[in-house]
Image 1: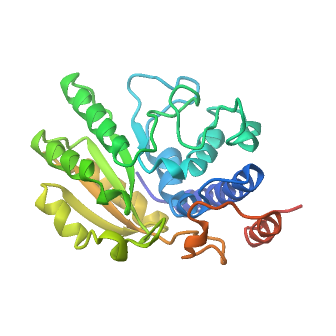
Image 2 (image 1 turned 90 degrees about the vertical axis):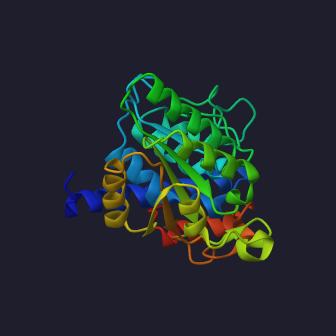
Image 3 (image 1 turned 135 degrees about the vertical axis):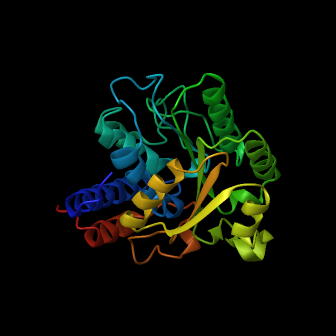
Length: 277
């Protein structure tokens, strides 16, 4: 796949729209996780608009690539991307976390078209993704499975059980992407339970490891092409990101891990993101 300037510009425009959606969704809801949603925007936009094989008019098309949001609290980012792809009407975004909404606080496969797995309990999505990849091998299908993990999430023991199992089964159709922003609910991941050295640990568990700037579309698209050429090993992309990326007062500010912006902060953020009133 060529990476043209036009493609990058288009992806940048989509990413900016996704960021505006995240701010408005969490602001209207008065709850949610804007910080970790903003950090994964470029990764999700790259997957859904430039890499993954999927069909919004047929969400369960058997040949589709699969994406699992294991760090389920970043659901606003996924919902925005799914709506922009056409999985459901855009109006649904403004009902996030409302009673009867199809958009729950964490992804729900039963409620939301395009959501592959119900996630939120950290590490569970990774296990589900591994199962999907193993099923693909057993069924001799050529789809790929992508799963997005948080860096705080990899403190969970289940993550390393899955890591060990996936390499044992040679799941080269499984790619994990680590949202490495260095922060979790209670502070720095290094201060809570340090997962360092991250890359060495994954290599020790038999994974092929790549590291990129998780906000650089060129790097994201290039590495997504590289993982397709890896054989015998599952792959992980360590994506260096900034929590709250794109909104100055949210960047690297753990206050917005699980706190919605106030109406005044919504206004300030949307002005930064170029929202035209």
